[in-house]
Image (cartoon, rainbow, N blue to C red; front, side):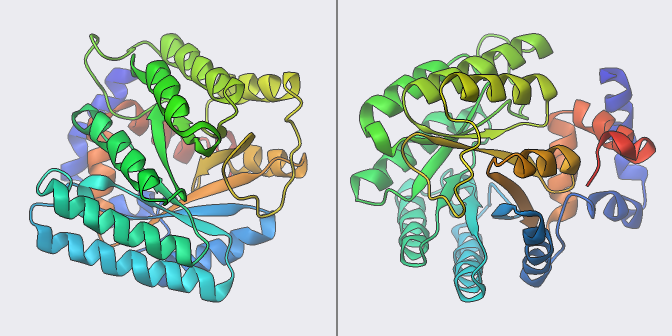
Length: 317
């Protein structure tokens, strides 16, 4: 399967852009904010809430950061005006973290304050291992300024994740709020698990640790072993079927998160059982670069995409 994925990735630059777009449209809401709004309004009928991501990351100049600041500001206003149950997800490198740390902090503080004013939440996406600690530091810095409407993503595959959970929970206590995922970035063996079973086990341990420490735990996985483990862990702790409409994060609680266009049948089943479910909705003009980069970082994703296209019953919307 891994070899098949690498072959697909190698052939992607040869494929006409319209073909790539046809594949991507299942997983990306569209190029414009209006596309994301329309997608969320439609999926709201299924009881889902949302996290919206403006595509793009690791800018090359601070001028580019202004685009993200302005676009997320527009997005927050639209979400508030339309009454959509949605938060935003941002990548620190898109706000300049690798170029001008001080200005990046200022940009992220500005958008977090605007989100707070709108009653929304900011999720700091976790990128590759170059910025793992920097991303955590950004989140802690915002909390120190009284901005508690911000949380971070942690990746199960990294060796350091359990230690990060401990340190963050020690610092923030009941304000701790995580999204836990396996992680898409392929990292070297000295800092990350590389085998599927190891990554699943590590992700499950992270879920256990978050729940036991009373942190809000957003379980972002399409893997059945992770979802089933999480359901068992929630039942054991009396947290299953929280069914709190419009729940705001912080403190003991949980939700299940899914990428747009992936495992929709499982998401709907979980929602029908009373679990809060959230759909990750990306949009923007950089959908092509985003898709190609994701596939190059982890060729196994390409295999899953092809499987979903050839055998759609395995990945229902």
